[in-house]
Length: 196
Ligand SMILES: CC(C)(COP(=O)(O)OP(=O)(O)OC[C@H]1O[C@@H](n2cnc3c(N)ncnc32)[C@H](O)[C@@H]1OP(=O)(O)O)[C@@H](O)C(=O)NCCC(=O)NCCS
Image (cartoon, rainbow, N blue to C red; front, side):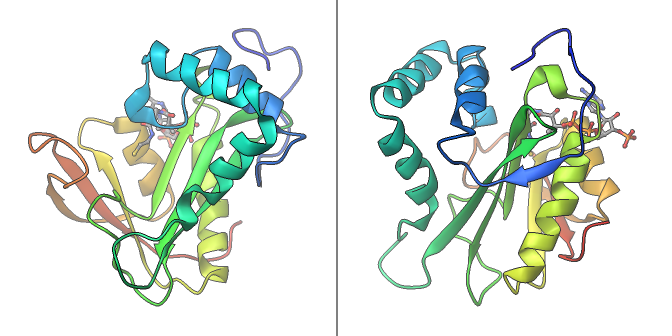
C-alpha cells in the first residue's frame, strides 16, 4: 500500500474479485484505519477486530467475505447475491459491490441500494470511484439487471458526483430503513451497460 505520497504512477483502474493474492492490499488498508463499510469509518475497535480475524485465518476470512452476500435473507427466494470487487490501479484502492436478487429489481429492506463503494482516502479524487462504477454497470448488465437503484446521503457530494457522472437519474429523496430516520438520502436510477 502507498498512503500519503504515491511512489509510482497510478495504472488503469480495474475491478478484481478478492483472492488470497490481493488480500494483503485490503489488509494494509484495514491496518491504516479504512473499512469496507463507510458507516464504520473511524471505528478503530471494529477495524482491530476485523484485522485480527483476517490474520488468524486468512482463508476463512476470505471465504466469509465472498460468501457473505450469498446468504439467504428472509424465508423465501430469491436469495440476495453480492458481488464484491476490489478497486485496483495496480495498488489496492477500495471496494465496490453489486447487490441484487435475480429476476427482480426489489431488494430486502435492510439493503441500501444495489451498489456500495468506498475508496481509501489516499486514492480519492483521481476518478477511481467514477471508473469503478462504470465497470460495475457492465457487470450488472451481464447479470441481466435492467435498472439499478443507488443511494447516497444527501450531503455526500463526492458520491453524488460519482453517480451523476455515470448517468444516475434522481427520482426520490428521503430516509431509508437501513439507516437513521433523520438521515436523508438521494435515490437514483442507473442503467447497466457497457463500460467505456
Ligand atoms: C464517495 C467516494 C467513493 C468518491 O471516491 P473518489 O474516487 O474520490 O471519486 P472520484 O475521484 O471518482 O470523484 C468523483 C467526483 O466527486 C468529486 N469529489 C471527490 N471527492 C470529493 C469531496 N470530498 N468533496 C466534493 N467533491 C468530491 C470529484 O471532484 C469528482 O467530481 P467531478 O466529476 O465533477 O470532477 C469517496 O469519497 C469515499 O470513499 N467516501 C467515503 C465512502 C462513501 O461515501 N461511499 C459512498 C456511499 S453512498
